[in-house]
Image: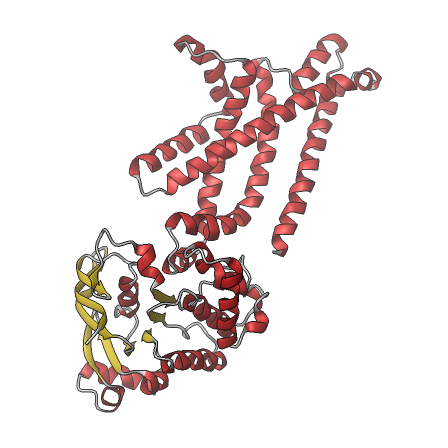
Length: 217
Length: 243
């Protein structure tokens, strides 16, 4: 046994920089992913065949292919077609597209879980379909969607480590670069794991509090 | 003779199943009609075709002298038609008061304080003013249904449709809902009620329709239908219900 964490601890500020980049990617990927997901879900349940078909295709392709391949197509593949983007853009966009597909399914099933009678009651009172969606179905669906959404957000934060493969120096890549100079694989990787765990735990605690609060209503 | 609702030669299909076959019904202002019949006979569908919750495949519905067409503003139409559902369908994320003011505020753009005043008066009328800040899950079934009635009345409808309003209730809670409906009838509200409550039908209805397999088999004043039904299917149904 030859463990020495002192080198790693002394480099902690560098790790924290990596954490910040990870949080940055995850935050924008989640934000954009939610936009894709809400749009995707609304298309999916739309009576317009084209829109719902498009959303079905989106979810089918993204769920059926590895996120790593998706990211490689974006960053290494698309330049061949003349579409170039920075590694940061590709990382965030790739992660967002992936998250969006799962969020689409979560929100679609959340909306469809709401009793049809709720829409009928709203319509029978003279509400327009969009009003029934925003005022009656939406708020109830949010409650149903919360636990699986939290789950998905955690997945996205962890998946952000894949961005290291398109040369973004987030937490994992920060660690790997440190290994090149210190040769301390075990120490570095365990510290990286703990940092991911801490970030996710903070998120889980906040989400748990939020859920409890909604429960009470 | 002012017909508030006219249903003419209505055909309604669910997939391959025809639920209403050449169905006709005229309803005068202030009239109270009770529809009885075995389950699956199309009773609820009649109500749902009037406020266009179900599209029809043939025939026409005329409301207050105007035929309902593609161009009809369904939102405006439905504000004139109150509907009460078997399973209440109260909005669980809103308080009792919020349930009642939702449509006046959102659809009719009534100022909130004004809507609340009207809502409280309606809740008073159904005996639930003290529950205005409760959530639906804190109410009994009978209370929920009374709130649902107040919610429908808040839009000041011309007619009220009741779709088996007491079928989901425990027996001891049926009375409180029926008495609210009776008072509504006494106040002159035009009503169509789908129900299995024969005593209510006898007391309140101007006319009782017996439906089976998508058509009206027999109709008349309650006394005739209940005491001297002429059609075999009516006799068989009443025997099963009353014994």
